[in-house]
Length: 285
Image (cartoon, rainbow, N blue to C red; front, side):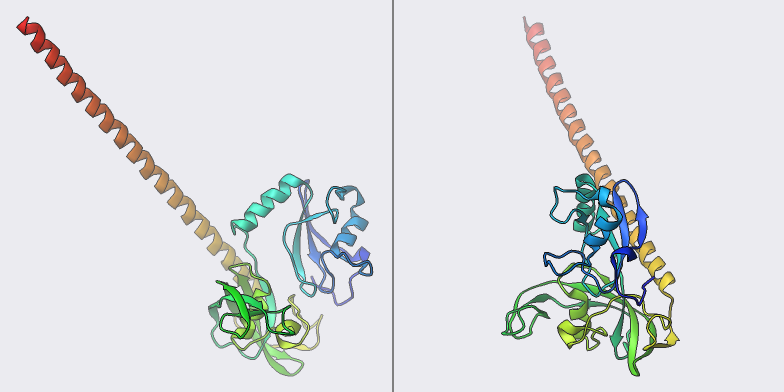
């Protein structure tokens, strides 16, 4: 659960640990790692403080982070404890067999409860905006690539007196700043989005006990049931993919057997023909 207190070396919360992985609950105001000498509080530093014996001196940061979370984004962060585990995690993310979802408040009331945001995203080459990403068609947008985000409305409410919507965002692709750019593109920037709306981005649980500015008013669906539905949908997709692979393998095996039987039949006919030719020659002699 997110805490309102600033991060410290001792505040690392471990969600899961095995011989291959550690999953930690990343704090909302901390970087994963940093090369800047003045940034003392990072997840990497927390891990070194908590698990000094697990740090790998052959890596730059001592730990192999399987994915990234922005500075102001809280949530589960997976860390591989060896090279083989890191490779396996990399393949999972590369093959998109990992289901990722983010909770956020966006400005305004999102009327369409479930939708897929489909905007190609590229880098903004405009002067003063080179650190920003933008959607295709924006002036200065370079090399836009296809990008999709699933959005599900969970709750309507107020944040600091302004109308907001609590949503669950599921990145279906993995572009830089994808979630904030997509939400801004539909006119509902993320509360705290400095990159596209000149605020400080925050992606983490919003609860009145932790953030008194958030006042929920109308709940459409719970986070738990929505996440369960996402996972079940993913499992069904995986089952379909496996079934399709089995069906393709079955058809390929049938074709292989068919080609083999055809060759056997052709060989048998050739042998019979040759045998008859020998018998005719023998009878003539």
